[in-house]
Amino acid sequence: MKKLKNKVALITGGAGGIGLATAKLFLEEGAKVMLVDVNEGELKKIEESINSKDLAYCVANVATSKDTSTYLNTTLQKFGKIDIFFNNAGIEGDFHPISEYPEEMFDKVIAVNLKGVWLGCQQVIPKMENGGSVMITSSVAGLKGFKGLGAYVTSKHALIGIMRVAALEFADRQIRVNTIHPGPVNNRMMRSIEKQISPNNPTEAEKGFEASIPFGRYAESQEIANMALFLASSESSYITGTTQVVDGGMLLL
Ligand code: NAD
Image (tube, rainbow, N blue to C red; front, side, top):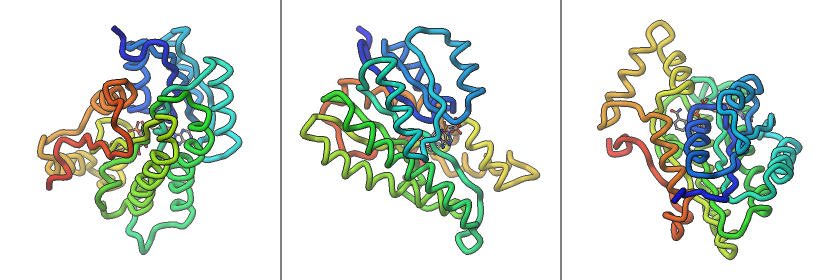
């Protein structure tokens, strides 16, 4: 029996590593999936390669209220309802100590990672089906500090606050809200962070991260998608208001 039969899932950051791996898994499990992203070229490629009537996309910037209502309404028009909301889009921002962090970059990271998730919760959850599930992608950086990633770390900690309040406010409709906290994932975002830390030798930065993970390796996007599937499915029917860590033991050290 497919775990997401007759369910409709909305995934922001859907053209990225974690969003796309999750979309593929949700499709396999019988869901209809709407991908939301700013990267139109990538969305088009994904739609062509997957080529399924159960997959659609919407180009939108999650950081604006107008685009949030666009992606919400596009999903409702296309698929008629929303059961699962993976509020997942995020950017890493630049790598600087707090004392030198450019104000514009701080504003940009907060706009996408924090306000974008907030707007999604504000507009999408009230329109969801009773008994639905919301997953917000935070990070291990939502539970501990990382030098140089001040704006990112700040935004990812704040998501726990949004999650906790939304979990309380929508509990009467049995809508569950949880955060997912991946450690470093083997995809574009870590390649960008590695290059910023060690521009001349990104492999060195990668080795440094790996040494800080008891499992000695990054996660694959698929391993984060597996947690998203668990939280989206009825297997997690009594889990709400929680922080789900997927980090190969990184927070132990
Ligand atoms: P990614 O860069 O591959 O994907 C992020 C996606 O979000 C991209 O497709 C990007 O175009 C999209 N996006 C960026 N700004 C947007 C905006 N304003 N509106 C709509 N879409 C936008 O990286 P990923 O690993 O798939 O990231 C997904 C989430 O996981 C992010 O919130 C990220 O912070 C979090 N995360 C990633 C890692 C990691 O190591 N990659 C670790 C912990 C948490």
